[in-house]
Image 1 (cartoon, helix red, strand yellow):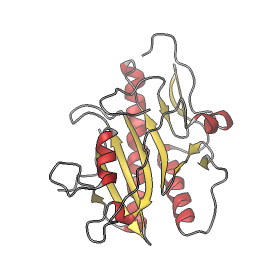
Image 2 (image 1 turned 90 degrees about the vertical axis):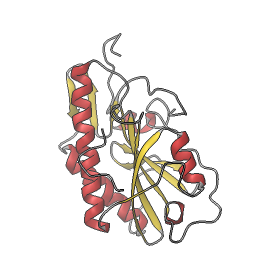
Image 3 (image 1 turned 135 degrees about the horizontal axis):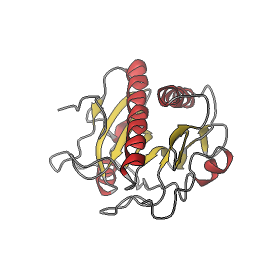
Length: 223
């Protein structure tokens, strides 16, 4: 799980991709950008109540969704320390997914807003949870009472990102204009070894590596 001051460890994982000793490859015909677009389209359908998730733990095939009360988490990437060739390939594809999510959200909802994560921001339980779970950047888009929050976990820049996800939460959790007065406690932790496992079984996107492998921000990339 992603917890305070804990390093992301274990096997690398990227939604809709296979990560193995040969590199990072799409698990189907979609590239990273196309999958990002499908993820946002599926969320838009859920938000607009035009469709339901294919199962309790998948948003689309190969992309899990975790239900946590009023919040839902769509894991995107898990990036523990790896040999540089694997790390570089994973980072490149993860950046493509991140950019694709931003692009699709901006198409639907316009420019992103930033969730203030510093100590000067007004007290807010969701923001506090983001910081406690190692989020260093959070951009959001809102419509019809719902916010899509694109989060990046990791130590402060210039350190590399260690994980990323898309949260679906009530817009009052991030809006300073119409904030929710009482935000319930919410568990934002996840890991491929636990929450992603059931989706992985049906649509593998993780394969074992050899033993021992171990202001508004711009949109250039999360790392």
